[in-house]
Amino acid sequence: MTKYDLVVIGGGPAGSAAAIRAARGGARVIVFEKGPRGRDKVCGDGLTPRAVAALEELKIDLQAQHRIDGLRMIAGKTRRELDWPETGRFPPYGAVWPRRDLDAALIAEVELAGAEVVFETTALPVLDGERVVGVEANGHKFEADLVVVAAGAPGKVARILGAERDPNEPFGLAIRTYVNSPRHADRLLEASLAMRDANGTPIPGYGWMFPAGDGTVNLGVGALSTMKGFKKLNLNKLVDIYRDLVRDEWDVGEYLERPRAWRLPMSAIKRHGPGWVAIGDAAGLVNPMNGEGIDYGLESGMLASDLFLDNPATAPELYDQEVGDRFDAFLRTGRRFSFLIGHPFILRNGLRFAVGTQAVANITLQVMGNLVDADTPGASGRVLRLADKSLALADPLLRKTAATR
Image (cartoon, rainbow, N blue to C red; front, side):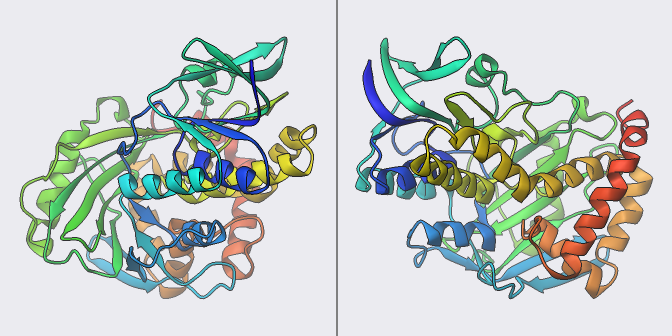
């Protein structure tokens, strides 16, 4: 075996964040990315203020990226345009940075930090009993004190480790493409919350227009698995419906590329074990209310490496505890709430409430912007804590009466 301190499976934002942090801290690091250098990742391309804060912590330069000052939420005839709040924890701005370019910038920083990157290579965990002792790739074995799983939506790596998505929890699907638009330089993300499928059924999800500032807009739609008929949902038709909805207002033309779909994992049975941790999407760290996970991926990657550099032996268990303290309450509440909005009647009335007043819309903005967690002060934090306790009591009923049944 070739010996490394840290082996990372996956070269997206989460894996890159872990590699950068560990390599800068003096660890010998290697990253295995199954795609080619410069590969694209299907994504909405939006960066919340939380994601921007994480990138700035990694000293990634965002000056050339298209700045976003807030969010426009549309529910029927109601529109709310809200600036990102001044929280003191995150900057009051986000960005749109196409994933091909974002991931390339992060990988370049990984290499500058001194880590090795191997492209077009699938790496699988090597176990000694229950402990992961490294990975196997291209017929060679690479020993490591810690293996960081940043492979995105669960696949073969997750199956080996027992870290697959919890089948009892909701997940999401999304589809996106790009269009030309004269509004490509808008400073607001736009989310249409009152989406319907081809049969007129309300969808727990939203359509988005994320202006990239380069002549193009990322156009897409996402939906949660908690709606009745989800398995029959045609995403290609859904994105066509949404394009037709925004065509005149955004003056969009034909798709610049074929719409591409992806799965949004929102849970994981396990996210750590002896010799390994899962971060980002591989750990189910995706906001059930907006499908966003870049910020959680960046944060969890940095956290895993910080704990490893401090003490490799205790890193996996402490990582699981600290990620849980930071994110679990919010993500758990979001998953439970998704069962509620799977019912069309509750969804319709919930949307009216979510944007009905400025005060409630401000809370909705923080939820949609991934700005709420266990440490959030003020009204948003209080609402989260109350919702977590209330929905915990209602959880058995929510699952028993799910719209998908």
